[in-house]
Image 1 (spheres, rainbow over the protein chains, first blue to last red):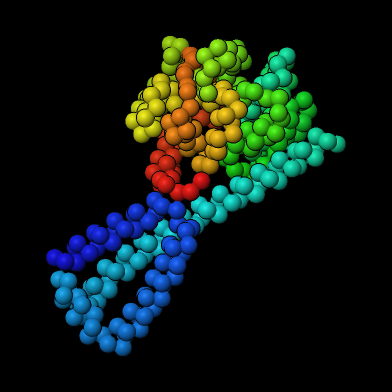
Image 2 (cartoon, helix red, strand yellow):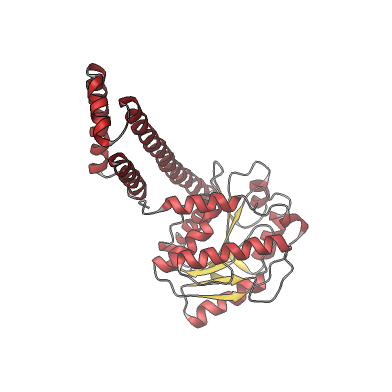
Length: 112
Length: 227
């Protein structure tokens, strides 16, 4: 089924994403575009629920709601990974800051 | 007394033993940087009683971060040619450090690593030895650097390594990070047999087997992230 190919491909993309530097201008813009498109797709499919059903049938999924669920799972994984990576970035910043403090304080202490 | 060597000792909650360890080291080396990694006990106060250069993390950052801080502090001293990482719990022997300093100078290596499995000294508890050997195998395969002991805290390296090492991995994954960087940065290296003294005190502070999982996860996700 087409949906299997699509889902596996998207998973691979998500994994590749986590391995690269997520702070490039391109990826930052990409995330904003992704967010906007989610909103748009959400609005459109609420206004025309039949669209989701048609799309689902095209890729080999029974109901629109099922397709939505699959995509939601992927979106959640993506979100969770983003949060994890963001925390790691903050951790690194914290370490740098603390190190500055420690070294500056040590130098001052030595000079006393 | 050598003034071209910096002994870097990261310490976390070692108030009961740190003064003794530092005084022994200071008897042979004039420049000792002791990094208190945000201890909750009186480690800093004990370090301050000695002539060691005290650097205190305001919060606990992990042994890797403490080492990096110590290295950066030592780098600020232009006289330092060799950097030695040394444990605070009395497990390492100064005689081994001296041996490694000879090795690095005579062989012009970038980094010399201590190995407890080269010396045939095997006073290790069986489980710990088994887990360690597995970890070493994994390290050898994943880093491409063949070592007999990839998790030894006794290391000696030159200024080039000190400047380019940049330890960033949290907690105990730093040991693997250092090994990976040996290959990535192309350092010339060798191992020297050393003896680890497993005292009752140092054993209770050892690494849990579960931590290996944490380390593995961190290493896998490190991937190509910007450093």
